[in-house]
Length: 110
Image (tube, rainbow, N blue to C red; front, side, top):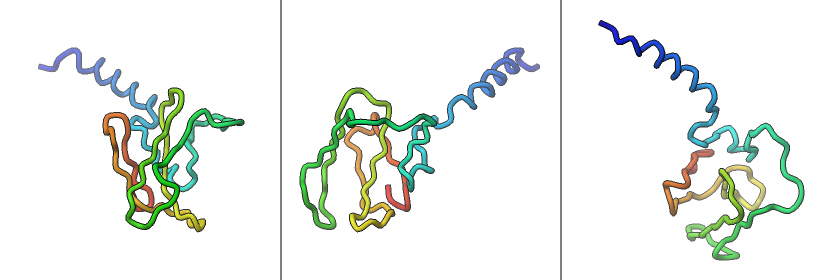
């Protein structure tokens, strides 16, 4: 005998899926362009956040700590790229708080 609640439950589940276009926050198609695809115009004027590193120079293999601070925001996309203009990503990232941030693999780098 089939439970009478299966039909309404399945209907609710199927209606909920389309309203979450990026449910995990990872937008792989943003890897090359660094555009968030929020479908809204970009911000003009000074940035309301600060990006700081613990060093002003580095050598291959060095660990560089990056800190992003500012008023509340819902997400960010951060990449390390070759300073010579090559658009491919370099290096790897490690998370200080895996509950607040997540890694995205771009061009074979995480």
